[in-house]
Length: 175
Image 1 (cartoon, helix red, strand yellow):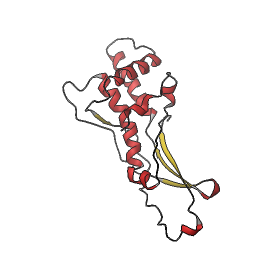
Image 2 (cartoon, one colour; image 1 turned 30 degrees about the horizontal axis):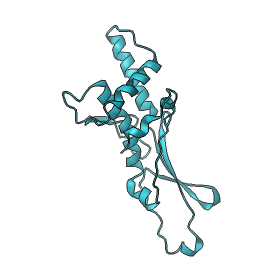
Image 3 (cartoon, helix red, strand yellow; image 1 turned 90 degrees about the vertical axis):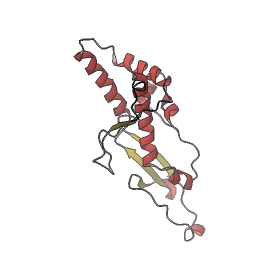
Image 4 (cartoon, helix red, strand yellow; image 1 turned 180 degrees about the horizontal axis):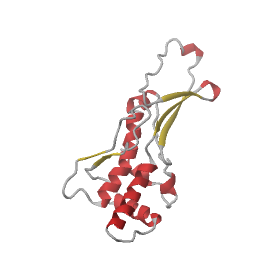
């Protein structure tokens, strides 16, 4: 995951003996079907949202601090602190929709916040909910049923910006 994110799955070619008996997998508009090697197909849910959502949160924090005449720490310090705070709030009830730039299949989609409570709006809550929002957006784009139909049992999330900070903990925010 960089500025955007994607979830890709290789769909193995159907043996000729089964091609007439096997229905073509029905895919949502959010999943692209791309030819792959050896007759296989690459199914990709390519989101416009990913690390750029977390980066936007970091930029907002920097901006808010400047507006309060407080010099912000380095970006690296902010990322590290957000990750540490998010780890403590993994079970937050706060939900953040991170589609700030829309999506290819839904350009009008916008970001959102739900389930805001008086004691559920800490920086840890916001950070954890934003990171979870990135993962949940991909899950919506590549629905569980598609993955089950393809017999996918394992999903790994890789976050380049988070990895640069000695961690790749986006997976902990996934269901």
